Structures are given as structure tokens and as C-alpha cells.
Image 1: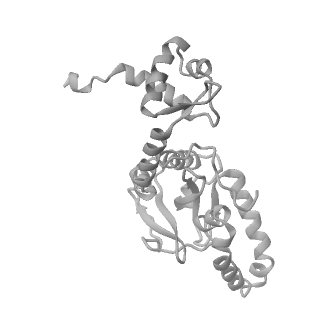
Image 2 (image 1 turned 90 degrees about the vertical axis):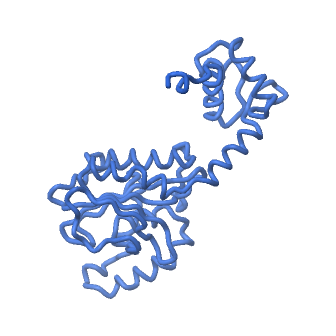
Length: 267
């Protein structure tokens, strides 16, 4: 059993060089790459020669290194096989247990943000939410997350119809739904989370975090919701922190380097 677990040390050392190379957007000199990986240039050089031979890296005229065609091929193959919902599903049970709240995964569907997975805590939340539920763009944390990060042309038609319906409500509701929504969207982008307090269901609060793909596009939202009396709705509270970590981990698993976050509205 012990032999089956033993790895090849040279591969592990070489992978440290590749990992450091992947962190740079420009070609890197050998000495800088070796230093970042915690080794001397003399030790790193034979590894880079081998990586050159198989196409893991290429070298510029100046002798600097960057990832090569084999690295690109492997990365694209991995991305093609990835399913963001599947990756999120592996983590939301732990999030529900850690927070003691209901957790859902939403994706963009033909009718708007749609719940595709729901994980209940030990004590289920008795609300009318199930797989297939379409969330309001203006009145829910999930909807506002998508409205904040999706390209405007994708959401504007559904959003304009919804705001038009809101304008037929009470005087207070109709005061300026557009201005109120833009304030909420700006708040969402500022904190990297969307939040709803007692809306649309009185007594139920929610936080929703974005998951971005390798190109920085929003692919899904992770929603945590629960009774306001025992729901920490603070932006940096006991629910927001593990929720952010969960969303960041899913983003990482599907290829996002945590720096390519889309902001299609120019904020």
C-alpha cells in the first residue's frame, strides 16, 4: 500500500515550476521562475529543457519561458469536461451543514435565474422553493446577482418587463424601481455578494455569491437563505465568509484564477 502511494519526486518538483509559470501572463526569465518555485536556476534548468522537448513550455528569443501548446491542450480538455453545477454540488452540502441554512444553486435559464440544486439543513426551510423555480431579477438576492454580473443585453428584456410590473404596485413600490435596483446592483458589485432582507418572503433573509468561469463570466450563483431571526446577514458575517469561500473554490475548480471577474456594466 505504501509503494502505491509513493510519487515521483522529480515530477512534483517540476510541477512547482509549471505552477509558477501559470501565474504569469508574460514570459518569465529562468532565474525569476526558479526563485518563485524556491530553487536555484541550475536546478530548474534541466526541468525546463525537458518541458521544452515535450511542448509543456516554449521559449522566446530572449530565452524567457511561457506555457506551451501541450499545456494549452490539456487545459482546454479539462475545461471542456467541467460542469460548474457538478462542481458546486460537491460543496453545497458542507456549506449547508456549516451555516445551518438552506443552500441552492442557480443558473441562467430561458426565463431567468433558475434553481437547479437545493440542499436543506437538518431543519428544512419551509418556503416555496424547489428545483426549477425561476427567481425574480429585481426582488431576490439571486436575481440581483445575475442582473449585476450578466451582460446587460442578456437581462434587459426580462428586467424591463419585471420593473414595468412593479410600477403598477403601491405608490411606495412605484416611487422609482429603477433607481432602487441600480443601488442594489452597485451594492452587489461592491461587496461581491447580493443580499435580500425579508424580501420577497417576509422573515427570510438571503445572501448569494457569484461563480465565474475561466473567462470571468458568471456561470452560476450560490444562494444561502434562512429565517431572519437566526441568519447573519452581515457582509462579512458568519454566513457570508463561508459562502464566499465556497463560491471562490467552485470558481477555482472550473478554471478561474480569481482575478478575471466580469463586470459587464462597466462598474
